[in-house]
Length: 285
Image (cartoon, rainbow, N blue to C red):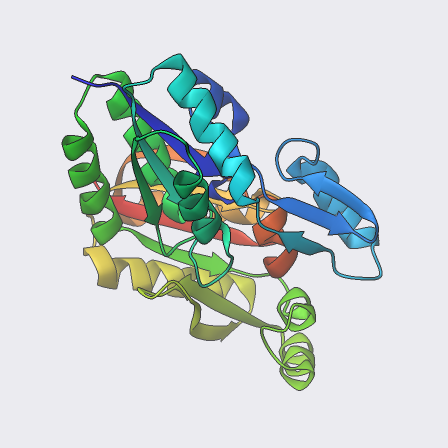
């Protein structure tokens, strides 16, 4: 049986220690503050990024990896094991050209290789959980077909909700209009966001006040899974873990949580949602 190797990009927000433990190859996106360019999760870690973001008068920009960068990543893995089967998981193609760069990177290889490139139609731990589970199964010696079947099962079950602290960054990034941002700020409106089946950011609800917004997310999760359901969850945040931990307490009171993992939302996704964002990613055990 051929070994299976896993590739992702930095927007999966898989922590460095997990990537290193499971042998996950990560190709970073880039973040630009003016003329300064940084590699997401390589030369610019989340904590440093949010300090820079808060101090910056202008929103940073982001850019996808080049096809050559993906080709080189695939080449490195095939040099270690020429018979390896590779699964490459990427940020929704609705947000970035990263997926297409990976497809082009595969086409640049001067050898035949078994590489499956996946447009996950998600972001952050919305596909980071798939990356980690795939890598765990690869380490167990499971086949590519078994891994892809399990990834499909989790993806079909997974629900995610983002609670943003302010509409400012969505407005600055062009996601909503200036008037809507001002209206939300004045009324303390907390928008609850998700990523829909087509891979777009989609509003779910708008609630006045953070506590009420968290309680609304609990209602949404009960609608999705049923009260008391057995769940695995990933809690994620940008600059402050406190809102995510508060949300986790509410989740544990309503569901049978089997496993909890934690991650910081990295610079690329953080550019658009801003400091103070908390997110839950949940799926059936």
